[in-house]
Length: 150
Image (tube, rainbow, N blue to C red; front, side, top):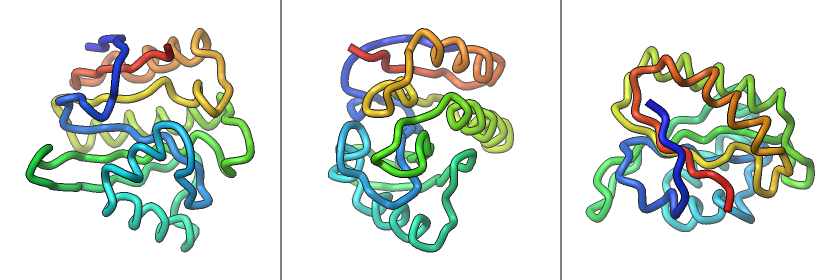
């Protein structure tokens, strides 16, 4: 089931959190910067993956991070753009949603929170991205909390 909501994604009780990223290893703005400050292990592994060419659009970087306050969280780094200076593209969103769909079928997760993919600093239109999310994720046995743009 997909729930559309607003608020702070990082305060979600969902087991998995989607972090929208670029593929050059920079988390300098928006939700990515919040993830960088909150999940330091994820940031280090993300930087290493980018430096070594292991993260491209259409792929996911999944990191399990554990701390006393939040317990274990599954961080799913989802590239919505190649370089932070460039806009996101609908093609990158679609290929990432396919990868996320496959990941969740192979690795079931009871709940997942995600932002409006590519619609903040990426510049995409939420009215185009929202139906893409519904199309690719509505048949997955995960409870989704999608944080809409304000």
